[in-house]
Length: 191
Ligand SMILES: Cc1cc2nc3c(=O)[nH]c(=O)nc-3n(C[C@H](O)[C@H](O)[C@H](O)COP(=O)(O)O)c2cc1C
Image (cartoon, rainbow, N blue to C red; front, side, top):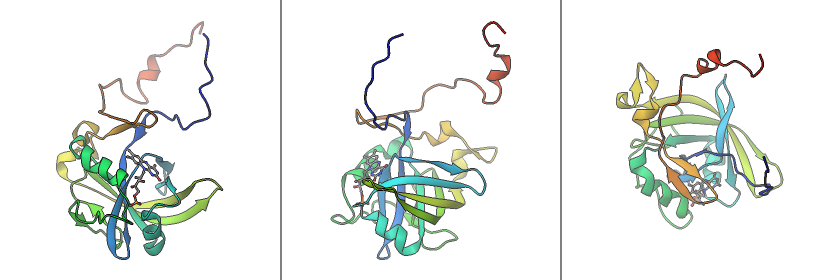
């Protein structure tokens, strides 16, 4: 096995594609985000890295709230658009049907399958081009059509998967096995 050194890059594959929303000057604004992940299980927290120059950052600081919206495959073009244009130049507030939840200040996208309403916990500057926002998820919103037995169903949500460095979007593929289950039959070699 010969491995090539292909550079210290952000090759954490696969990446999700979400729309982070915040009100900037009271106006909803959304940007596409792939650098996002779960930070803690309980209380539930997530974190994401934003370029310091983005317009949305000011809105997150302003209200100390934001939303993470999971678009389905059919929203791929408008999601990409939110990643192409900045709210500093283009008004993105009418692209979607906006709604608000219990925090009252974090705009969310009705057309998205899942909406995670979040309260800002911390904004971290670690000296690079990004800043890291850490937020607590205070509520999740979903239409019944995206759920099975009350839980988010990936086959109904049809999220958009992203491969960053070749700039491509992908669909979810086939079911591979049950988690915390397929490993039960596994036997280490020689064991
Ligand atoms: C698929 C995709 C993923 C992106 N992921 C991120 C990300 O994780 N962090 C980031 O700062 N910008 C990311 N961007 C770029 C921003 O979405 C883009 O610069 C956006 O126009 C900023 O909007 P704003 O200035 O209105 O906040 C991504 C763009 C695309 C198309």
